[in-house]
Image (cartoon, rainbow, N blue to C red; front, side, top):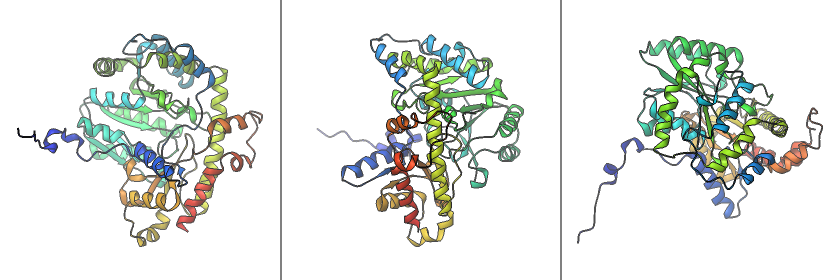
Length: 432
C-alpha cells in the first residue's frame, strides 16, 4: 500500500506562512532551557506580573471551586456588573453590564474583535507582539504608524495627523488599537494627547480599541482612559493578568459603548462556537477582584510603588551607560535603544535586533526580547526589558513594613531586587 503523501505548504492556511510561536513565550522557554543546564539567566523576556494574586481573590476562587455549570457566553452577570462598575468608578464612563463581555484572556477578545469587525487595523510601532500576527492570521490589512524614541514610542497627535493626511478619507469605519501604559515601552499618553487623538478619531470615522491592561499599574495611580473623551467610539480592554497578577487564570474583559453593542453581539456569536464561556470558578473569583475593596487598593498601591522604584532605577543606570530608554510611567517594561553602540554592534557581525538579543543572552544570561518582535525595524537594535525578575511575594511583604505613604528607602531595591540590578549591570558591561 502506498503511503499517504501531501504537500504541506498547500495544506496549511497561507495566512500562517512566516508566522512562528509568539516570541514572548519562546524566550521564556529558551530561558528555562538555559537554566536547566545550570546557566544563570536574568529573566527580563516574558512580561508576567511578579506579584501573587491578592489573597482575597485566591480565597474567592477556593470557595467557588465547585462551580461547574456552563456560564453565559458573554460572561457571568455578577462579574459583568462588577466590571461595569469598575469602569464607571475608575474611568468615569457610562457602561452597564450588558455592554461587557468576558473572554479567556484579553488576547482572545482582541482576536475575536479583529475577526468580526470588517476593517483594516491601524497600529503604532512598536506594539504588543500579537496585534499584527492576529491580523495576518485573519487576513486583514495593517496600517503601521512608526514612532521613534523622540515620540516616546507612542502615537502622538502629530503622527496621527500625518497618517490621516496620507491615507485620505475612508467611507467605512476603521479600527485603531492603542495600548497605554505601553507594552513594550512602559510609557503612557498624556491627557492632552488623548484629547487630540480622540478628536481626530471621531472626525475620521475611526473606532478605538483602547488596550488598558496596564491601566491600574500606572505608577502614579492616575491612569486616564481615552473613553473619557471619545465615549461613543472607544472599546476598553482590561483583565486580570497584569494588575491582579493572574496571567495564568486567563480572564479578559471588553467594555463597549452602547452604540457599538452590535460588535459585541457578533463577538458573542463567535465565542459561542469556539470557547463557549470562560471557566466558571475563575469568573466567580474575578468578581472579588473587580469590586476593588480595600485589600485590592492596598495591593495596587504597593505594586505601583515597587514597580516605579525599580523601573526608574534601572532606567537611570541604563541611560547613564549610554543605553537610551524612557523612564517608565506604568507597567513593568523599558524599551531599550542601543543606537549609541551601532558601530560596536555591527563590528561583532550582528545585523538584527534578534541576533543582538541572542548574543546578549548567550554571553551574559540576560534575556531581553528583540525590538523586531514588536514590529520595529530589525536593524534598529532595540529590545524590551521586563524588570520583574524578583520574588514578588517577598518584595510585597517587605514594602508593607513601610508606612503606606512613605517612599521606599534607597536601599530597598539592592536588598529585594538585587538580581534585576545585577542583570542591568551585566547588560551594561557587555556593551562596554
